[in-house]
Image (cartoon, rainbow, N blue to C red; front, top):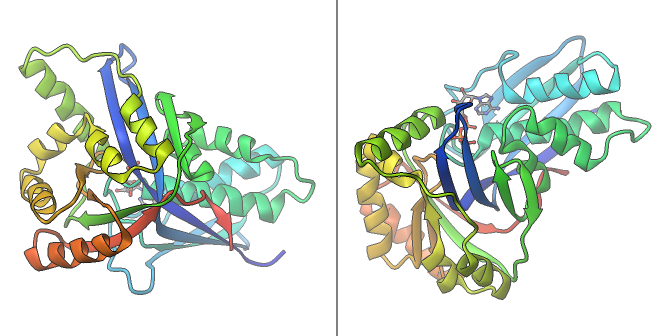
Length: 307
Ligand code: ATP
C-alpha cells in the first residue's frame, strides 16, 4: 500500500452542558456534537520512522505555528496507538493539511488524530482486525473529541463526552464561522468556568440533553435549532476574550438565527436559515471587521473518510 489520505471534519457543539467539577478534576458533560464541512486532510505513507509535517491547506489562512511536528502531535500519538494494537512498527510519514483553526474550539487536533487512526489502520491492518468502533475506542484514550471525529454526523456525548449516540437529524444546516487571532486553551477555559461559578456562588446543575434542540434537529428546523443552541463555556470564553462579545452581537445584528462560541472558543458559530442567507451573513460579517477570517460550512457531514 502506498499513500492513504483521509479527510476529517471540524465540529461545533450545538449544546455543551458542563456539570460540577468532579473530584478527579473532570466535569460531567452533555455534548451535542455536529460535524461541519471544514476539513483537515491527513496523508499517511510508509516511511523508515514516524514523522509528521504540518501545513495550511491551500486557500486557508490557518496559523499552524502552535502545532507540534514531533511525537506530541495528536496524529502521531494516534499512529503509535494503532501500531501498538496491531503489533507493527509505527513507521509512517504523516502529512497534515489544516483548514480547521488551531486551538479554535473546533477540535482540529482531535480531527487529525481521528484521520490518522483511520489512515494508519488502512495502511497496516491488512486482515481487517480493527472496526470503526475499535478506532473510536482507541481514540477516546487521546481525547474526548476524537471518537466523534471518527464518527461524524450529529451525536450526543455524555460522561466526559466520549460515549456517543448518533442523533436523528433532517436536512442540512448552514453555518458561518468567525475565527479569531490566537487560540484559547481548553483547560484554561474550563478553569475560568469553575472560577466564575465559584465567584457567583453558583452550584452547577447536572446537565441534561435539550429536548427542544433534539426536536429541531429531527424536524430540520433551523430557527428552532438557532433558539436552542447553548454553551456553558461561553461566559468563560467571553471573560478570557471580551472582544468575542462584539463578534457574537454583530452576528445577531446581521441576521444570524443562532449565535454562540464554538466549544472552548475563540471561534464563533452563526446559524443561517438558508444557504443564501449564509452567503449574505458571511459577507456582512466580513464587512463588519469583527473576525480574523469568515468561513462558511454546512452540517452534518460524515466523520473521517478515505479519499
Ligand atoms: P477542542 O475544540 O477539542 O478543545 P481546539 O480546536 O480548541 O480543541 P486544537 O486545534 O485541537 O484545539 O489544538 C489544541 C492544541 O493541541 C494546539 O495548541 C496544539 O498545541 C496541540 N496539538 C497537537 N496536535 C495537534 C494537531 N494535529 N493539530 C492542532 N493542534 C494540535
